[in-house]
Length: 123
Image (tube, rainbow, N blue to C red; front, top):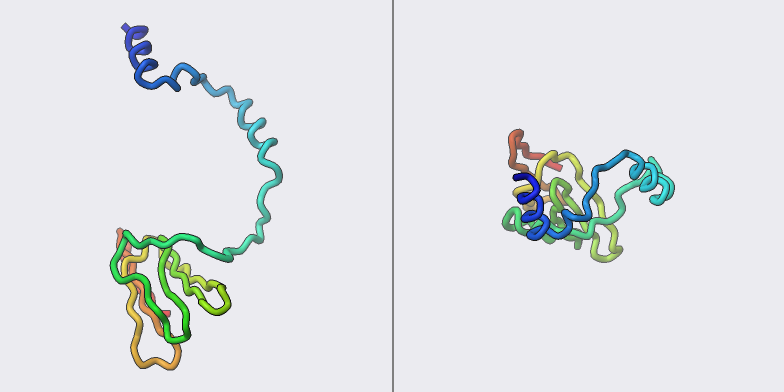
């Protein structure tokens, strides 16, 4: 019977006993407690993560004394002297590979992504 199944599940998953059906009123209470919405003009300033498990050799030291790495689909150039970051945000999937072009006056990078629409970007 359904009651026996519910009791067995509540014993295995104790939080089920505290669950109720949503009425829609909770959304208004939650929205009021969250404060104002974020500004629409927010800009990405710093990334504190590194996607080291998604690809190999995806941390490079650039000629200008910066580090290049990815965090998901975003390529990050971290200037070690100024502790600032610049971002390349033209990938739609996780970045899977980097290549640094040798003998360039500046840094020329190729970054690639996997997925349904793989792409290589030169920047």
